[in-house]
Length: 153
Image 1 (cartoon, rainbow, N blue to C red):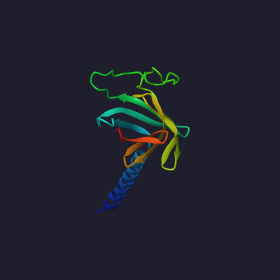
Image 2: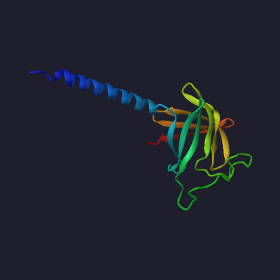
Image 3: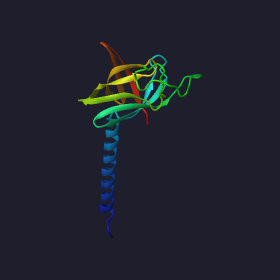
Image 4: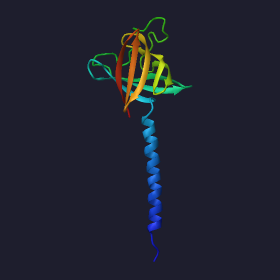
């Protein structure tokens, strides 16, 4: 009688290797700033938008792909508070690039800017991962504010 143990053992090893590679690559995708992130309003703790962060030519960019407007607010507003000198002035906020030109510096990305469409101001920006969250810091002179963005699946 033939033993099936070697066949079963090879299949188990093959599945284990596949599972290990899957977990490794899935874990790697969670260790990057690229992807979709849910922004949270500082005052209400409610979701505000989804920002998709991409990398191009070694720089990181982020654009708003979805808004969660308050009841009674325009679901597809324009950036009327942006500076008239800014190309984003009076343009739709959905689809708008709000993070521009961040470069990787060790575990952080910095050297670029972020636009807050709510007030139209452009801030110097730095982002980094903290666990599964994205920390987003905007600088205005020596002052800064940090937000925690949540990974959107």
